[in-house]
Image 1 (cartoon, rainbow, N blue to C red):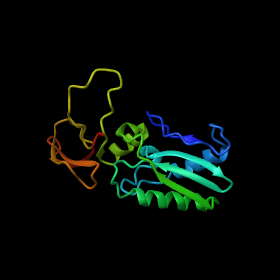
Image 2 (tube, rainbow, N blue to C red; image 1 turned 90 degrees about the vertical axis):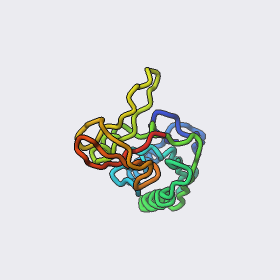
Image 3 (cartoon, rainbow, N blue to C red; image 1 turned 135 degrees about the vertical axis):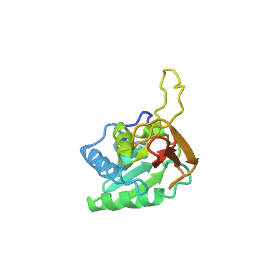
Image 4 (cartoon, one colour; image 1 turned 45 degrees about the vertical axis):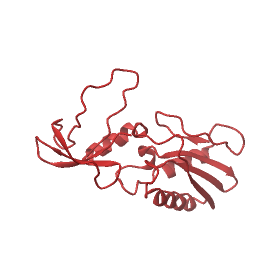
Length: 182
């Protein structure tokens, strides 16, 4: 079984052999599934977004993939599933099952550091990381991905997708999306 690599444990799924260590094939299939771009944010892969939970061989030629959507009603989950099925079938796996799991719920903490870097490079302010065991940050400001200023304002609680808000920088006057913290 191959599970997520984010800050929280992925949902457990038994491996076909009862072993919890991934086989070389499971590792390869996870890399293929994880490299699928997010349909709404193609700058990120499903692995970087943190929605890919497990990839497990459940029998010869049979693989089960678990995905957790960014929110329960996410319309992109169907496209993600179809893209994973296509990629794994192209690899020669005839029986691919992609299952949506809602527990544990996805969180912006599941976005990898590389994913956060790519969001900012793409012009989307990444979500602020959760304060692990340290003090709660006093600043609620969002950094502009264009100029770095924290003098930004909220224009709309929703943007091109429900998981993003539309903001504008007071310094450079550029609008930008902010991936909301969940």
